[in-house]
Amino acid sequence: MRKIWTLILFAAIALAIPPLPRKSPEFTIVDASGKQTLLTSYRGKVVLVGFFSTSCVHCQNTAKVFNGLQEAFGAEGLQAIAIAFNKDDDAAKAREFSHLYAPSYPVGLSKPENVISYLGISIMERYVYPQVVLIDRKGMIRAQSDVKGSAELQELVTLRPKIEELLKER
Image (tube, rainbow, N blue to C red; front, side, top):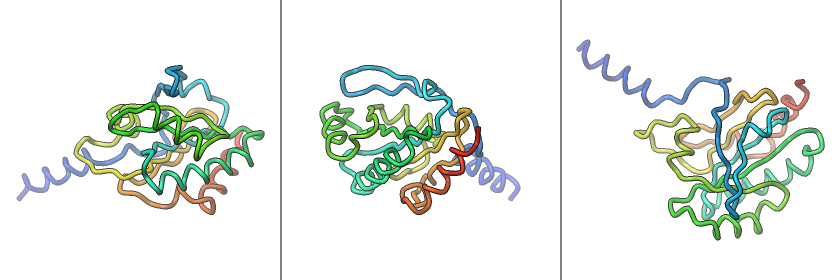
């Protein structure tokens, strides 16, 4: 019986997302033209990162929410970013996504394994799109989507107060 509980505990630890707040790991954002930008280059801003599939309806709706938030709070220090991590890694899809849903903030590309590593998701875990991360001015991840999905970081009504709170911090 003790071995079973040990295995269950090990599995729970292996599947858990690292605790919050935590330091945001470095992440390279590659735009559709191939230009690379480090996520740390946005230090000093509150960064809202959406990891999207370009064909996901929830991602498309969240991108529209990000657009409104960027327009409302960009001058106060918010930087929204979308990262498309389709399995096919298609730059044309990212350009189209940018054109249709996110004209006021950058859209980049990444491979799924890079996103999973950044998010701290176990390779054993099933995740859903979109995955959203909110990073404070000091580079600490303060909020992250549940792996199995939740509307908390996808909707204006819940995102706006979190962003306003982080923008007040200096």
